[in-house]
Length: 297
Length: 296
Ligand SMILES: Nc1ncnc2c1ncn2[C@@H]1O[C@H](COP(=O)(O)OP(=O)(O)O)[C@@H](O)[C@H]1O
Ligand SMILES: [Mg+2]
Image 1 (cartoon, rainbow over the protein chains, first blue to last red):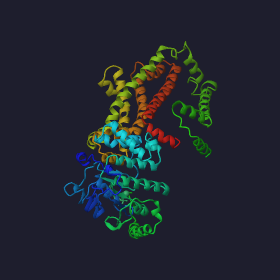
Image 2: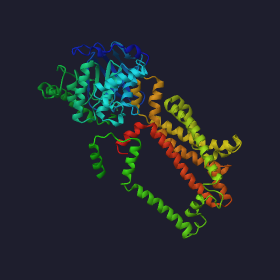
Image 3: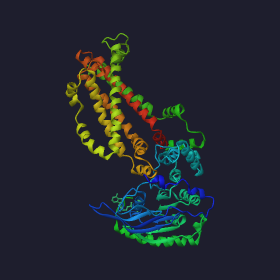
Image 4: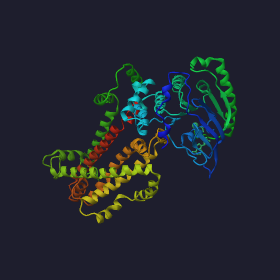
């Protein structure tokens, strides 16, 4: 990851934190005509078809769509886990992947929070969080551990720092995973259904914490979910994808001002937006259901 | 169900969970309230009584030549044994010492080579493509088939025996380590990648700890396999050792010593396996603690 050193500038977005209206200046993603075909010589599975999407710096972009439509595929392309077949993806005007270089380099400027959680089970929460800065050598070991402890405490996990991921609840683990991403001061946070398996109460706590974190950092988020209420509550825009192969079907603008809190959930505006998105998703869900394919998650 | 209830009521008191000796004491106290220890004692007693009935008391045909438990235990504890071997004779203790030393060396070499080899095979696709076919062809050759080759290749008693014990255990360790690397969830590699790891970080922070549970399962099997091939080798060409003691006692018709060596092997093998497990538990606190929360 040779470029990560140059692409992770020391001046953190966190520095702008106190002013809530702070305008983010980095983390703009430009997805241009991206197509992804799995297994080009065998049975072709077209997962993404000519998909284009512009995500502004500091935007919370929610991606929804039926299971197996190609959401994770898109995320993997941005993160550099999978190549793309056609098209280009840019981050802040710099090419991540394109025709000449189908696989993006992995780097700490785009950190992923995984669908099933991927804190290293053999490291304590503290060691997990400190891992990024230590291996990138952006901080000394002691400094990284200290910063990690501070950030965990800020996320309400001070007592859990010395525990292993297997010892804490899934909500706490997920929170720690987001802290592990944020300590690298990434340009973009890529979240793949991070709250999928959680009950509604835990979810709402996670949402408030995430919003609070966003108001502080204004980090760009590419957030996959299939919970529409979650999408509207958290997002600046909700992008509804078609059933496989994924294209953008509809974009719902959420012009609800921030900071937001749970009282929003009862408002008329909120319910209208949810039902607008629901209409679009429902059509696609029926198509996906009728195609009857087994999704590989 | 009743245990569940007991558990939750225990949670109300805001004490820190016990650790170390206190935890061991707590577990011991809890376990005497379950049927497990009594069933274990009963099982062993039942086995001893049957053994004694067959050989010493009823003298059932085919069993009457086998030394019974009373005879073996008396002999084992006798300072002046009738057949030359007991806990108080040097010959017996030397046999145990020699076998244990051989296991230590063979198992040590096998682990020292097998774990890194398996890790590299799992980590590097290219290295695996080179070496996997060789491993898979050599591995099924039964260890006894290597005996003549070992004798031709190495001179004396010691080296061929060590070679055979090492070889058997090496295959097991390598294969299990390799499977351990394969078992690591892809998302840990991806997480390491997007946190800015270089390949060496992936090796030390993901490959090695991620394969650890399989490595230690493998090592427990491998130490057993090492004993198996060691005893086989000692029986064929030995000068000392428990395997040699069995064969030698058989040749000179001192069956009591033979059975004594067999039972000794059982205990020593069990102890080494337990030691490997204890080391594994020490090194994998993360796993022990998570499993403990699930009540295991
Ligand atoms: N590695 C792969 N090889 C072949 N097909 C895949 C692979 N990964 C995903 N797919 C297929 O691509 C489609 C989109 O998958 P994915 O992006 O994971 O969907 P989701 O929107 O649920 O995250 C699915 O039909 C899936 O079966
Ligand atoms: Mg998915």
